[in-house]
Length: 81
Image 1 (cartoon, rainbow, N blue to C red):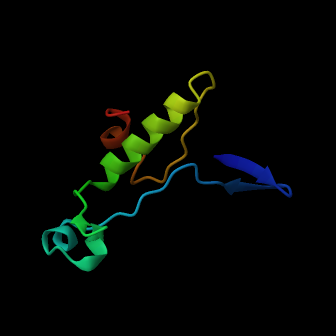
Image 2 (cartoon, one colour):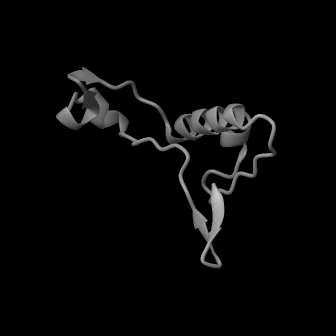
């Protein structure tokens, strides 16, 4: 969410995920586990799309403006959303 704080724009996160590389998950490293279970792999685009969909569903009566950098601002993100 973008919000003006003391006259400047601030980005306030409504959701976040930790990205774990596939090789970390395949190696079953301790950092890739939650309560002893290895987490399933998700690409950064998949994670971003799921977060945007969840936020848009929650605020279904309001328009949503998504601000991304050039890496996320393409059809790899927009098509699933």
